Image 1: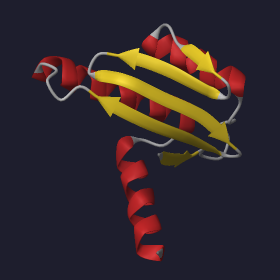
Image 2: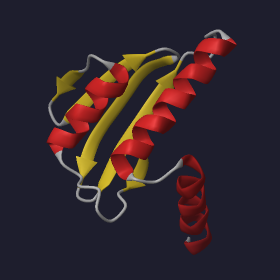
Image 3: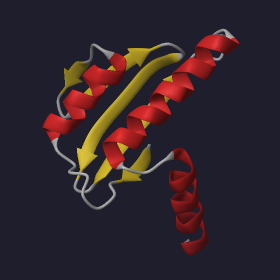
Image 4: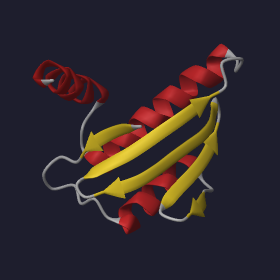
Length: 102
């Protein structure tokens, strides 16, 4: 499970999470505290808020056509950017810093 921090000014709230899921993926299911989405090459995307972080776990279909996989990645990155405030490059830098700390 990956943890995505929120940039200052981006509120980690259930309301925003639901709004962004509906905007980018359409439908979702809720199982306890987890929001579950299925879209494109993503068979299952489980997410929940944990303080000031979004915890997300994905299960993808490795046999998805390339164009579907590319569109899925773009949509997922756009979703994370709008929700957390960090672009894909910024998230990569943050993850590298976390790895270097450990």
